[in-house]
Image 1 (cartoon, rainbow, N blue to C red):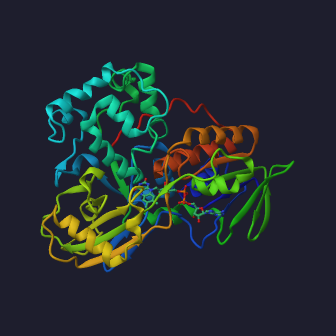
Image 2: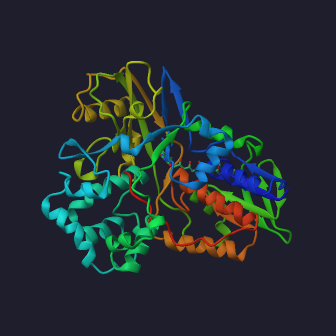
Length: 450
Ligand SMILES: Cc1cc2nc3c(=O)[nH]c(=O)nc-3n(C[C@H](O)[C@H](O)[C@H](O)COP(=O)(O)OP(=O)(O)OC[C@H]3O[C@@H](n4cnc5c(N)ncnc54)[C@H](O)[C@@H]3O)c2cc1C
């Protein structure tokens, strides 16, 4: 065979898809340890409700994911929830406050006082922050203290992480480049070439009528995926790569390791990575259903910064965004608990989690005494955190790929943590296999949508 891909999550499946798209004659095999494809993506249908233990959707603003949807037929069934139509909320001062959807709304939001609003402009006068600051250090230095709860919530909503530990260079390399190049983020944004700006259009969140899990079989179609095949070792040989698995040994000139960072680091441990493991954040989803009395607003949901000391990190108003997720006349709420700062909450029983979340949300929304439906979904997957040492790990990966032709590393945590990051990184690995690796270009400036 020509290529061995390790892992049949979205990264491995997308890498196989993009290779076939460019070179249909290439012989590609995907090795998967478990009994199913899709990895962290998992949807659960129960009593007429449809919830997710992994990703709840992804934005439609990335070329690679859109190609994948169009060419697998998924685009025909995709459900879209445009960000412009659905309000997002921050839990602040014990109530839900609508988040600014556009930069100009920062001037009127009650989330910032007058001093806080003026301080945002202080960014223009600040020199670039040296070293490897955390997101919290960097945001306070550039935009002032008042903005921190909003920044904390954004980081919670994406990484379920701790903004006092995540590194700004690792999470927002594009924004950091603007700061370094132009001396200020705001000045950099103003000078960004017109074509790189979004044109003011907000993207939409994508999901599917049968849940996110629909992506896996659609991508698997036509690919040689071998389940129950745990990869134990990857060895370089004169001809390329030898992959030792629980089902025997395979060889190929190219190997793509498409695993979460810690899985890759385990397989490449003899190549002396700068750290043996990266920290991960774990969350569980407490899915709750009740009669739709109209009390849940038409919105995506809310996020709660740490300073609010809530039980849940936030909650998605899922059936508002995607129709068909709850029986007629009911509403589905999916609350997230745990995260990098509160792993102890994941030790609680299902009953304790349900009671804790319902009591917490009951103070924000006028909910009935008890939910009619409840299910605790505990994900097996942790979310890799880009904390201290992440830049050194990226340098090490680059060095490994350059020193070892035929070795390609993508997957959860290396180039980001979202579905769009995975498809983009998988597409790059595929290009590299097919010999078309283009210029990586400047780091992308990713807008923050909470
Ligand atoms: C709780 C949670 C919520 C999330 N929410 C969102 C969201 O709302 N939006 C979004 O865009 N993203 C979200 N994500 C991130 C998204 O799920 C990931 O980006 C994506 O699923 C990672 O895909 P992957 O293929 O790289 O890794 P995985 O999905 O982990 O797949 C890796 C696969 O490799 C297999 N494997 C592991 N080791 C071996 C081995 N040695 N040999 C063979 N096979 C092996 C595993 O069994 C698995 O199937 C969330 C993630 C989690 C955990």
